[in-house]
Structures are given as structure tokens and as C-alpha cells.
Image (cartoon, rainbow, N blue to C red):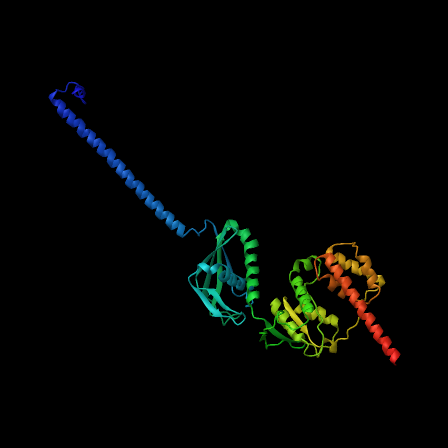
Length: 411
């Protein structure tokens, strides 16, 4: 065999030793191969072990991926320091169970007398994750035994929400996320709340006897003239969507209606339909003992009532002498232009001349002009509506004059 002529360890190795040398070579080769094979097997086992560890680590990290490198926690308590209900807590409560709770397995349910439907709440210590603009927010509802104090001696426990997020998102959470939750939660509660009727007396204030206003009337079932019903409904919808407009023009966000007519003509039904449409509470003011000026009512009574309410002042003609104050005469026609400028940011319009001519023929107040202008955010539509209103006023005035002339002739 040619390859045995060159022994592995010594060229002087006898031929007979060639077999031994060959055996040694084969034995060494097998040993080396075994070592390599063992190394490969060990490497495979090691790789598999490492992979298994990495997989285990990945699974564990995936389970706890909500933990943050630099966490920040905010506490939102149920009650304020003065023991009044924290509206932010209530808004968070409503938002989480309405918008985010679909993934939860456990929820608490109860009937809230202020809400139309059953209300759901998070279970104690239940955690929920919300994502806002790629920011992960972890919420947990905490119950804790309260420390008894003179200010809150009746409280056995305190309840608060714990919000945790990555500190790098702090500004977005404070400036965008929390305000969004507050507004959304309040809106949800407004949509679902039971309308309340609050009797109000000027001497005693809001009565302790508050009633649930459960009236079935709607604009669809309201038995009034269809054109009048459509006009009121459109006006209400325009008012509801005009908050920014009122703010930009520097005017308080309120709307007034004078509802008159004999008993049984649908005045109360119209108010009920408006309350159901807007989902506003009703404050019924008793002015039978009210002997102050309308200015006092406007300055002190209305501002003291909550926003998003309907204020009903009944039998106002019995207690307040209605006078045509601030009539638009020729020197004050510029006031109409100023109103148009405030509403639509326009100083000139082709319809101004026609409106000025009509204002010289009829007595109207600036409040009436302003009311017509506020019916639409479109200048052309509002000014045309004002012209139509003035023509109707002139027609009414002419009709009254003719009736007086007829009576004079008969006399």
C-alpha cells in the first residue's frame, strides 16, 4: 500500500509496524472525528439551549412588555381635598369601561340613578392598557383603606386610578391624552344621563326636590306647525355646533326663545322636546315673588346656573314689564353693521342698503337683529333671513294699523 510507505510518526518504523501505525492513525482519526462530532453535537445542544432560553426570555418579555424603562405614575382620586366628587375621576371611569374595556374578563355592573342604562365599572385592582397616538398607558383601579380624619370621618376607604406610562411621553399624556379622556368621558355621560328637573326659587335657591324628567315627547311627535317645528329644530342644531363661533365673536353661548300662547297650545311640550333633543337638564324658575329688574336676572341669576341647561321662566309677562328698549332708529343703524361685523367679520355687503331701508320703517331691537344674524354662520343666509324677518314685522305693523283705522271708523 503506497500510503504506508510514509509512516505517520517515523520513517524508520518497520513495515510490520505499518499496520500498527495504520491502526494508530485510524484510531487517532476516529478519536479526532469523535471529538469533532462531539463538539458539533455539543454546539447543537448549546445552540438549542440558547435558543430555548431566548425563546423563554422573549415569551416572558412579551408577557411583561408593558413595563417601562423609565415609568411615570399619575394618581387620579375619586374625591378632591374638599370631599367633592372629582369630575376627572368620573370621566376616566366612564371612558375606560366604554372605550377600552372590551378586552377585560371581569367588570362590575350597577344601576346608577343618574344614567339611563346599566353602568359598568372596572373590578378592583383590574389593569387595563390603552394606546393613544402610539403611547401605551396602563390604568389600574386601586381601593385603599382611608385614614379617618375630622374632614372625612365617614369614609372607610378611598378609591383612585393609577396611570403609568413611559416618562418620555409625559407632555403628550398631560397635554393631549388626559384632556381627551376628560372631554370624551364627560360627553359619554352627557349622552347617557337622565334629564333632571330642578325647581328654583329666588329666595330659597334650587329645591331639594329634584325630579327625573321622563317625558316621551320628541320633535317627531310634537303637534305643532311643521314649519315652526323645523325652524326651531334647525336653530337648535345651529346653536349646538356654534360654540367656537360664539367664543370667537366674544358672545356668551346662549340662546333665548319667547314662547307664548294660551294654555293647551303646546308650550310645555315644546320645552320637553327641546330638553330631550339637547339632553339638557331643566331649571324651572319661580318668579312670582320676583320684584327686581330684568338686569338683575340677567347679571346674577343666569350666571349662577350650570352650563348646558334649559332655564324656563314662566309667566314672565305677569312680573316684568316688557318695554321696547334699545330700538333701532336711524342714528343707531350703524349698530346693525357692527353686529354683522362681529358675526361674519364683514364691513360691507350688498344687502346692507336694503336692510337699512327696512330698519327705518319698523321698530326692532338690537337683540332681535342679533338673534336673526345668529341663525346661520353664512353671512348671505343670515342677512336674507333678517330681510325676511323685517318684512314680516312691517306686515304685522301695517295690519295692526289697518285694524286700528277700522276700529276708529266704526267708533
